[in-house]
Image (cartoon, rainbow, N blue to C red; front, side, top):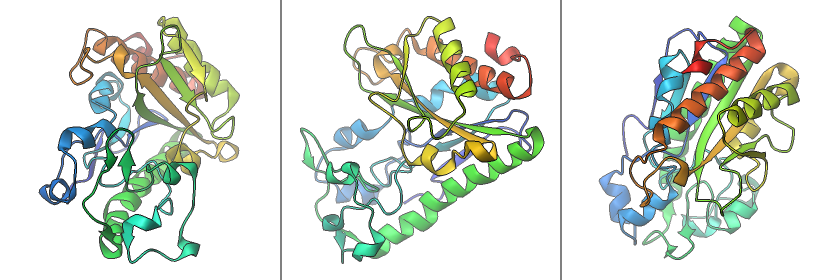
Length: 282
């Protein structure tokens, strides 16, 4: 695969209690992955949270620390538990005790995506158990280890830490919220912090909702521990709000969404360490 499946942006020592993660925007497709696919790269790209890595620039410029995947979701999904495996696509299949069956694995969107609606199976054959183990050990675990370390450092410095897990979603029906926050139905972040994020979003004119239809995945479930003052919140933004009509390139709303993410980070920061900083005014 690649020697750099993700990268860190931001100061070595956190200057804000908010850490950003972007697990689904990777678009460095290794030749071996392309060769293994029975569909063109354009189909694999449908798994991406298109260009979300570029939306965080205002928040990062104001001091936020971010971890951004470069390896695509098609290779390994960092927002899945490493046990969320479809055993039918691994040779030999993992033992039953090593599996975590979920609706996501049954739908083909487990740790290694198996199929997409309208496209069918994504791969020519099964992935070897050794290759799956390699991806877990060299990509999945290091990514989550890096998040955990950054959150621990932020908590030590500020008394609390917040992970904002950034994603995008397919266009929503007319009249429905363009921004969805997920907190696993109240389990991963304090109500005060959630309200701060909602308030910042609505102040910029974006309709926002919580947990429907996206309540958050493995990233916030794993790292959000409000009782220990480590909070986690998933952010989903409608792709039509920031991409062009073809949903591939930046559209007229791109900078508005970048400002939105910066404002949410600023509001979360302010709720932890005092009045919102200049990040909220970007």
